[in-house]
Image (cartoon, rainbow, N blue to C red; front, side, top):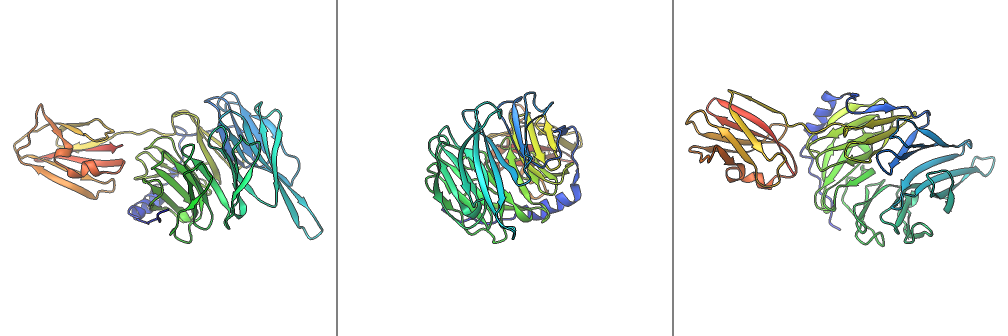
Length: 427
């Protein structure tokens, strides 16, 4: 596995932006739902836009109407018991991790037993499928109808190849493993403490470690849009992203007080990251820039979208945040001076970007491409622009257009003293 390289190109910009631009989370983006509990909620999953479940430390909630009403399915009375995770498999079966601690002696030594349970009827009844003692189990996930995984303390990874009927040990490492994500049946990633990022390309039969990560980096979340584009986040306000399947990673630096608990991209452009200090980081341009919001909770644990519009975030003190509009959408805004009439399309674009412009004089036309923070990428003066039907093809005059990474950029079009700036999105 190739090593990780760190290129904090946007670190200063992002750190400055988030400290100056933090704002309260508006109701137009996310609203609070009534959970009926003050429990610390940490896991949320939905089968469709209406039917879903939430697990807290002591409670298990369900809804059949997108969270308009949440019903208490279970409330643990034992102070030594707690739920740790919840998952819905490819057969729409509900799985939970239930941990029970037992005090062994007067010195306070305890034994921890973790039970993996499955429900075929939405949490009304449960069948214990597996139990393990002495280990902390953090996550359960199924990558397809047969392959399941358990991860947790001491770097253990348990694998099932029969839909969760049996589990076998596949790996033992030192650090605590916190999150696991499969982008396909065969390709998956695990994130954990002590700079741990692991990758499998054979459905979890073996795992390779990604190395050369800064020693102070610990990861709590990993998320991939496809086999190339992914994100990982955790301690000290660091987020990492890759566009080559984890062969190399770039680094973004936010406030050191941000401890990222979860990262979720609902499209290649629009994503969210939740932090233990109750802050939400939101991008609508593929991570090129982020907006920072303070949410009404101290600890935001997990983000989940059941569709492009319907999403939930759960956190401490019974916090459930809900959106039915995608949590905030991309807006292509324009600004200019001198009344230069121009437009760009298609936007977003993949390869070809056309500019429709009505030039006012023979001063030529200048095209200038910038990053969002105003750094010029390229500029080209067209002294005698060949505008067939007032159309220009941007890539014929700006070589960097074809080489741009996915994201949002600024394109300035000027003609003498008139100019306009368009926000363009490269897919």
